[in-house]
Length: 127
Image (cartoon, rainbow, N blue to C red; front, side):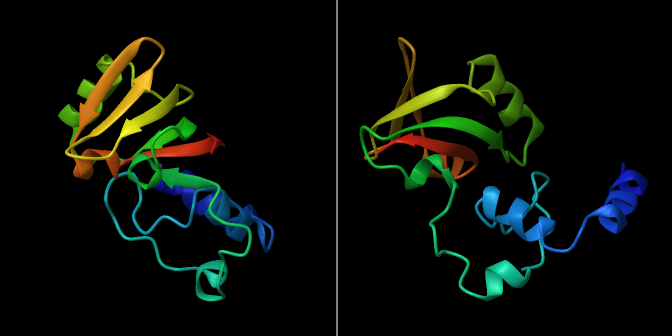
């Protein structure tokens, strides 16, 4: 995998990595929890158009989004979320933020603590 990533790194045209970074909401860590160095877009006040991808914990009640990716650092946590149907492509709507984050997927409501809500990233679809 690292070999493929290295080859890809040398094939990417200038500026594309900033577009990818912006699309993903300027993540600070990779899905494995390793730090991602800040790129030019992050250092130059990238937030001109706002983040495209946001953590579930950043939504306000009644806002919706489609899950883009999950950055759970623990494999068991990721497997548990996926078993509950929390998977990329699924549309969710935040119901409440306190005392826990409650969101709805179809007819199912799920409550999570903030640590887990910080690890589910969405493309916002409704404000």
